[in-house]
Length: 83
Ligand code: HEC
Image 1 (cartoon, helix red, strand yellow):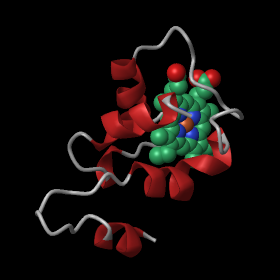
Image 2 (cartoon, helix red, strand yellow):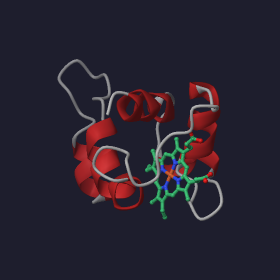
Image 3 (spheres, protein in one colour):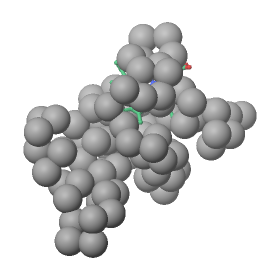
């Protein structure tokens, strides 16, 4: 799966594609649910705090910072916030 995701980062303009949907459906959907309904975002956390949680993990959620490019945690949060 990691190899598949790596392929999706190559676009003709050389900029990384937005992998949020692919990452979410591979790594996050099982716990958080298709519409982030199983473990929802908390109203009291800011987007910045949420991005830190994605990078560093929290309670039973593992850290994902190691597999994300710069800015991807923030994109994932935007993706989740729109669900
Ligand atoms: C093993 C299950 C599991 C997986 C996989 C998982 N999470 Fe979580 N996530 C949790 C748990 C548990 C919490 C903490 C809930 C709490 O604090 O009560 C959490 C919290 C969060 C929060 C903080 C929400 C808030 O507003 O405080 C974000 C953001 C988040 N996860 C995003 C993600 C993303 C993005 C992925 C995939 C890259 C992911 N999670 C994968 C279980 C998981």
